[in-house]
Length: 166
Length: 419
Image 1 (tube, one colour):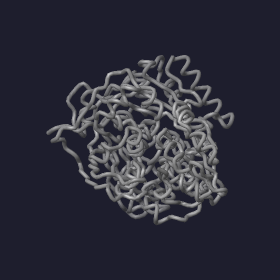
Image 2 (image 1 turned 120 degrees about the vertical axis):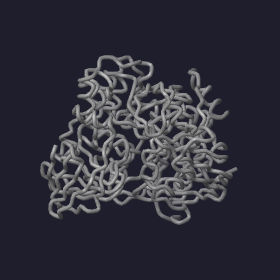
Image 3 (image 1 turned 90 degrees about the horizontal axis):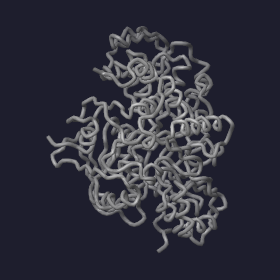
Image 4 (image 1 turned 30 degrees about the vertical axis):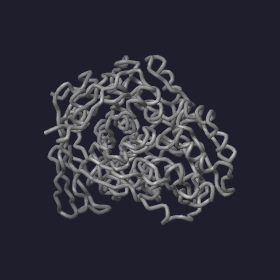
């Protein structure tokens, strides 16, 4: 799968409260409503700035904090095609794969705000078109590749009725 | 090579000999969801084609994060949880029962050697009683409820050996804040943390929960401690299930072993807006506060309320401060009634709210105003955490929070503790 979009850059330790605040997420299961508030405490205008397919680019420990699955879901429903970070917090990473939000771990120091990016998930590469750079991606563990290939954990269970990694 | 606690618990639950780095599908002993995560899990459960849960006596929902409901949106999600719980005959802890991470051990659902997942990041709390417990999201929770299993990567471990004796007025909260400051927010990401040494052994089980609870704040997957006679006694008084104690081998392999002498540790505070922004209390003494909060899965236990009551006995909270107290559970609340801490705190001016998460997650029960400074016994101080991104949150021990409520300024509690 080839994704392309513009970079919106954030720093290190972007926590799930910043991605979607607790004051919204306890009220509703409407992810399109939650999507309007994505990243609001870091950039109140974020939702209005992004276009379909754009990418969140961050430093280390993206998605630290709570286990709320509303975090990857709100990002996905806002139209973000992919999150690229130097590293991810563990629970967010699992939740993203489970819900089918592509997450890519690579060196993001060579990506700036507004850069036009392409991500090749199959090949494991990030292309920074404007700067002519190819950035290698850290591979996923085999269980996660299987879950992603099935289209997320829900579809994996629909298909197999259980965990099936053999 | 020998095994860590994590490697032993995963070997027991995967039915094969496994080591750090192995991918396993492991059997779960207990599964938990709360009102911020269970509603989504119910949706996933149905989408996955789930009919029943693997074992209704091993699945619990807790309504604690926004309880009682502050608005109709929350009410409808609470109703969804109640209907699911009733239909699937799982355990339900409704409003007023308390915080999930107090209830799961207190009600005897977890014992040493267990493997537990909860759809809440602070599920790592039960590591204090020698169980591997970790936080997951809603879809993982749904898969766990259906199958009684989950996939894991067996984590590498990092060991903290804390020697010496914590000085008077310095608590387990100060120790874990200090360690998080040393490690930073992602210093232990993907790792299982093991906390050991004489300083940890000297702590009561209640105090140990505070340390394991905050292991996630350095990124750790679990915050494990060794089994000893204190754990044995505590577990026997809360659960009828047999314990299966797990000890690390002397030649177990650790990614890192860190040693600390805690004998000269001073009270610590995490400054806005990150948990790893830790400073000695004395460096920020005098910072005015408008709200103080004692409670949460970190520090809402009876020993925490007693410490606060000791400092506030016969005193009045500063007129410029609102002191909010949320007991961690109904049992803690009742205990505080019996021993007089409740009366002491109310006389001092505390406003008690329902046992549960209180104002910690910013949904109700004390949202600060713009520019206000709040000192809290919770585990997170992210911008906006308490419902207002223009407020400032400091994290500290119950003693530091009580002393600060008394003076209206961030205060070192050591000269305020009464004999």
